[in-house]
Structure formats: structure tokens, C-alpha cells
Image (cartoon, rainbow, N blue to C red):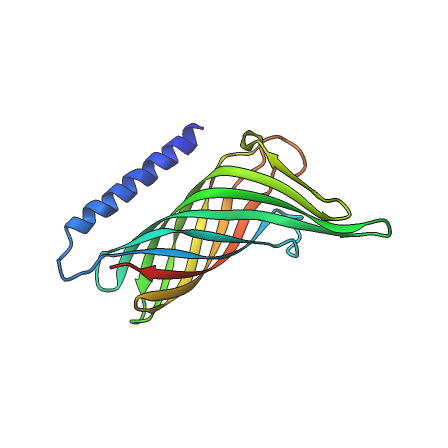
Length: 207
């Protein structure tokens, strides 16, 4: 918990410094604020994870682009985002699927580089906090069950990188998140599982 608190404190200081740097910029360099949302394609990973267990979800939130120069900017975001995985089964006795859904408040902090007027790459890290979790079953076993988030590690962090196409005031992009922390608390066989996620997003600049 101390490590998590230190990480969040460092993240808060970085965000604060970024906004402070904004006020020191030349007035000719514009700051952007906007909203964004899109589709998530999530999974869990470890040495034995199956890449076919992808779960579709969504992400939505706000962002700011704080220029350092004409080509480089800091981009903090605050998002509601889904994670999870889907397990399909098909036997002689039954078939169906079970989904584990994890919902997070996520704060990415990215460095954005504009390679051309309409194309950018971005990379950095993210920290997120688990706000709810649910398991559902379809097919032979139909159920819906909310889980106590205390059963999981509520704090998640990892790396993020992506590309974007800008058509003022609309942008589209693709991003990959690679989790570095496990989300299962105890020592069962799945305790080394981590989050991984592709997101396809659309953003709209408000100013």
C-alpha cells in the first residue's frame, strides 16, 4: 500500500507540474481540452493466458493536451474504463461463456509527439483504481454476480502507447495498455494474472 500511495503521490505531483508548466507557455501555443471515448478489447495475461479470451468493453472520459513545444506535449487523461476476460466452453454436456468484468477509474499520463500535422504517437504510463467487478454467465450457466472489490488489488498500473490521427476538432486513435501489477490478491493459481488492453477511441476537442 505504501508503494501505491507513493506512486499516486508522484503522479499527482507530475500532473500538477504539467499544469504549472502550462501557465509558463507562450500564448501562441494552444492548450487543448476535450472529451473522448471508444471500444476496449481486454484480456488477462500470464505465461499460460489464452489470447482468444478477449472481452469487449468501453472507455470514456476527458483529456488535456499541454504543449511543451510545437511538436511535443504532455497529455493527462481521466477515464472510466473496463477490463476483463471471457472464457468460452463447449463440451458434450454444456456450452457457453463466463465473463469477468473489472471497471476502473484510470489516469494515463502520456508524452505526445506530433510527427506531422495530422499524425501523432504517444507513450507513457497509467494508474487506475478498481471501482466495481462482476461475473456473468451465458449459455448453459446463466448468472450475474457482483464481487466485492476487496477480493482484488484495487490499484493497477502499467505502460501505455499508441498512435492518433487528428482531423480538427475530431481525432481517432489506437492505444495499447500493458499492465505491470497483478489484480488477484491471494495465492491461487491465477494470482499472477495482469491486465492487457487495446482501445480504439474517438476524441473531440472542446476549445
